[in-house]
Length: 342
Image (cartoon, rainbow, N blue to C red):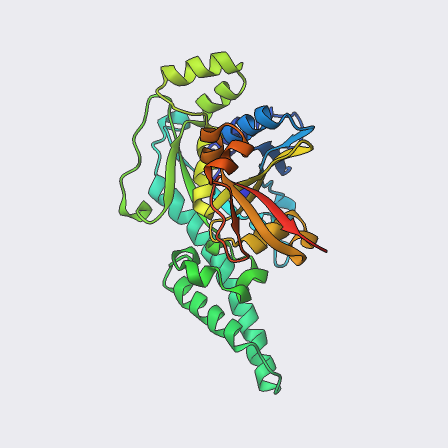
């Protein structure tokens, strides 16, 4: 999962990036893009690793990407500041909700609409160019993909009415649109960057349809640099139940509809990230194409059932270990052993 961090200048993007990744600001060119890969905290993986004592424990991972900006390329033909984040799975929009330099009051609504408009304009340009090419091909007698044309036309209609494509999830997920990496079609999490003593969410109808949460980036940056014990005490003092890393990851999983299943053994205990609607056959393919090709059955044990039983053998005696077929919808917390033959 790759998450792109965007926002207007002085919104706190770099501070948030460092809070989430634990990275420190480096001297040099601040216009360069930065990326940080972190493991997804999961107490279930910790517990399974304690039980099985594997040679290797592998957590799910999240990549945070903070795009840079090169002003020398601003006037280059077809340049778009959004090009760098087109391959991101979702966007994290940081909005300033604290007083700026010179006691400048924040304007979350205006900042949000500014960024959202830029994303939609970028998509509109991309779509109009593609439609023009397809219409030209049609006039030449060439066959065009009517489903693609229909999807693009529907997108263009939304954008002309200033509605981001993410508002229509079924349209955003249309297979014919995947290659365009449309910016306003990407799931978005809005983070309101508040001051340390402010817990209020901006109250405006423009945010009603958005996934959002409050963050205190400067405070979270300080916490990320503390020891585990000091961080725990600090979180308690500010009535925070978890660090920014934990909370943003949880929200991001919800935003993208992701879950985790596990494979266990003496060699490795590992978490695998999939969509909520993934069937057992496709989950097997996430591990290896050979397992999917030779799929026979999935031996499934739910994490909580294993914890209740104490061991896999006891869970089997209790009847909580079951065999599932190709179309079984994998659940969050499933421990799966795939039986296959190739």
